[in-house]
Image 1: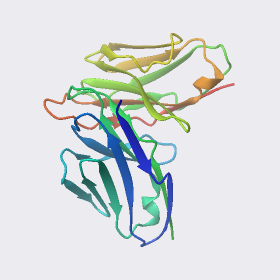
Image 2 (image 1 turned 180 degrees about the vertical axis):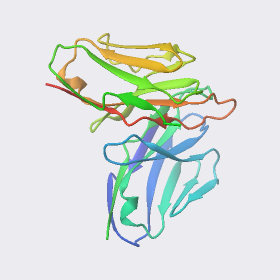
Image 3 (image 1 turned 30 degrees about the vertical axis):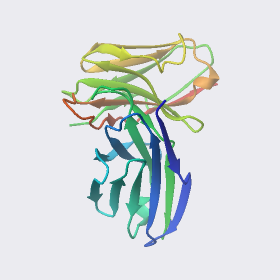
Length: 112
Length: 116
């Protein structure tokens, strides 16, 4: 069964203090990995898709990387507005339009 | 585009009552997904549709839950009868058809359901 584990569960950073969020997965044949951001009281918002080991994508202070066993979301010089829960997900099943299996998320708090 | 629209945003009901959650996907999207999010279990897929046809309902917890998609712009998730353990945030998401590799899903704002 596909599994997605995120760590740590919660992370508190000082503004400007860079760090990384981890997403480990166990799937039979990775066909992609998704990162989402979720603000309190809102639905998950799509950030990145990574399809193969070695791939990297960036958006403002965020950079997502992928290996054969895990993905990292690197946050460089975070600001308070980066505070949110970050979710990763992998496609389950074999089709391109299969469902997603989500990790439980990492709640990031950035103090000014 | 207005994005995925869900209603109501909040629902409080008593145990045993019927609850109906509604979703309007992004226009032109081929797939519609219903998820449930709780602190204990995180975000879990309940059911998904392709071109209004249910494809996988293995995540539907029990017969008290049912979902329909009568047309491309509307879907409902019904719980009858509701129980306190159904309290959660229910999300609807939609996506385009992926031809080769999986693509992202777009989520609505969710419906927070409280069953007392």
